[in-house]
Length: 227
Length: 309
Image (tube, rainbow over the protein chains, first blue to last red):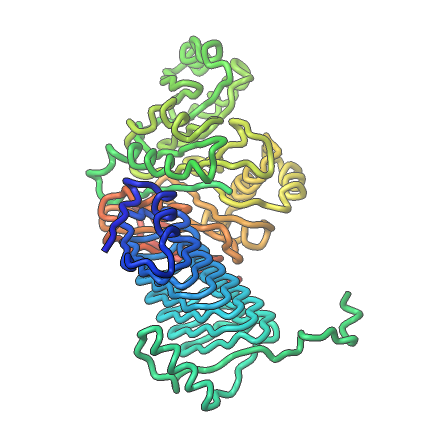
């Protein structure tokens, strides 16, 4: 285990050291101590390494991640895992707004709650939240899966494309063009595998699936008068 | 972008350290607002006396003999403590209106930062650390306080454009965000006779609260109606004589983190503003909900009022 004390060496050294790890590195286990809510910790990683951050993080931790597994042993600030491409981010506490925004791939797991705009414009990332999520989550979600074991806030999935949403609790309101959908065997299978990958024990049959009604895909000439 | 910090103490033993704790929090938020900084601190109260914080661009001239001149005008003792560009004045409570009138006549260049019985407001242009050093904020004690670091977006970088803004006796407001209907609202409030000094959007927000309360609303009700009447983005923290409140607009894109322990309730625009507080590792840390008015008061139990967005 390699240890980087962020207060000692500074953010640039922490990130430069982690960036220097290649696919063949044999130094695969790292810990970052004293994060104290700093911004952009472990951003832009691209190696199959495991990084444990020992405390709460600020803006954009794990942004643009590829391959790496990042474990945040605290709560995470706004924009955590923004544009994640692959790999995995696990947050032990809560996540602030726009978690995993525009994420293309990989998995983000939140053991606590996620705030507003969770998975906004998601493009393939899978996000599993053990608690609740805030308003405007998965706005314009294009693909990927958002799993919520608790409740969802206002306007879930507003203007979404092909992203899928699975919510176990209540949904305060659905956004424009987002509707409840039938849970077919392939969805139960997918949800089972997502919960398993996230290490969360929940019964997939208790969830409801939501997704796009696909009425916003094309301009409806009957609405021309509205413009 | 701006930074807000707030600290409400439950444990009296921390009161002598309030200024030091708030100063450290404030300096952490320098990245969010390097152009000016301010602090509202609720400290000592002298029974039966009103307290004013005033500011001058030329303190050497304006504050010279000011207490003597004001005492003569009031026919009563006016005390003054000069602190850099600011001074704290106090006089018998029943003569506070006479003091305000006398001040305007005797020293027209002096500007009123705060009025009340416990509140003092200090704010200036400059890096938060320099502003804090200039006023010796770290040495101040008190029960609760609010700090602000400003990155101006809507109006000029001036002392009067810095936060906090005084909204009434012992009340103040700080703001992170930007209001988009401040010009029309300013015209409306001026027609109602509310004094607004600058082109700053937050001053209009503060004036709006002052107006609502003048019309009979409680601070909580005034904040709730702000959700209808203010257009734009805001995270507000308001200070009152015995507590503080938090309100975020329904979209809530401006960040806010709160922490609570047996010793304090703290507010920060970011978690890193809170990391030096005692016991933060085990504190309850959460984000305040949008369109919800939160209040912590020394004289009542905390309240939360959720409004439909």
